[in-house]
Amino acid sequence: MNTFLDLIASHGSCRHYKLDPLPAATVEVIVSAGQHASTSSNLQACSVIAVSDSSKRAELARLCGDQKHIAEAPVFLAWCADLARLERVAELRGLKQKSAYVESFLTAALDAAIAAQTAALAAEALGLGICYIGGLRNHPREAIALLKIPRLVFPIFGMTLGWPQKPVRPRPRLPQSAILHWETYNSEQDSALQTYDHEMAATGIYENRQVKIHDRPGEMEDYGWLEHTARRVSKPTRIFLREILKEQGFPLE
Ligand SMILES: Cc1cc2nc3c(=O)[nH]c(=O)nc-3n(C[C@H](O)[C@H](O)[C@H](O)COP(=O)(O)O)c2cc1C
Image 1 (cartoon, protein in one colour):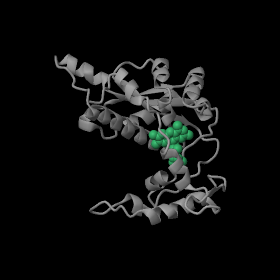
Image 2 (tube, helix red, strand yellow):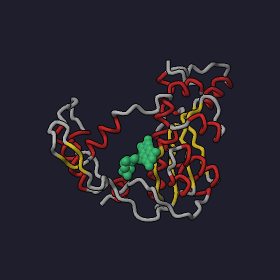
Image 3 (cartoon, rainbow, N blue to C red):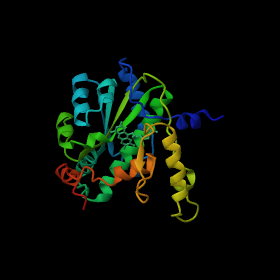
Image 4 (tube, rainbow, N blue to C red):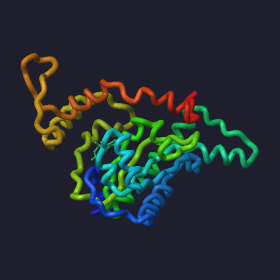
């Protein structure tokens, strides 16, 4: 048995936390693990803002779409793509950073995501629960003002951190045939999608809802991952982001 692989497979997002505080030293250990992750050209183009103040967390909970686990968890981490530090690095050596490109933002966002996931695993290894919070991009201007985030830094997602109230329930994932392609990309994924749809419906996550079958009038079927996901991806999301990224110094040229 490989306990590290077991730990990875036992992941589940935690949305119910005990109110116990989290020592700053524990947050430092977790973020240190994130800092050890691989980083593009060793640029380390990310920063993380740890928020423990309860009134600030309550405000963040509101900004992120009234997600109460943000107010409940003792610490909220705002993971940021950060090119501000590299601007200074270039300046210290008499150069100018060329950071207006999609590639620059992507590099920084990837660095932040890789560090965040490494930190998340460290937190889970310590028995803590985590939940990523994309809701941090619901009202980026307000989040940027609240956290006093400077130009060339962008909060790409948050993460709640704390002691789980109860054990998390890992969710099944897609059959590997949909994800792992050997040698060339395989577009024939329908049977994997159907299998997963039934598997997710069987977990009870969707409360055994029924929906109309779209191409068979009058017939009903389980509301599963397919319907849930199709509805999700058919709505435009956060269409204001490009404009706010530009305001923050990321024109994405
Ligand atoms: C970038 C990102 C943003 C997310 N945003 C939220 C969020 O705002 N609120 C939330 O409750 N969960 C959020 N999640 C958690 C996902 O819903 C969750 O990871 C997914 O449903 C799979 O479930 P699991 O993590 O329990 O395995 C987010 C996950 C990621 C990776």
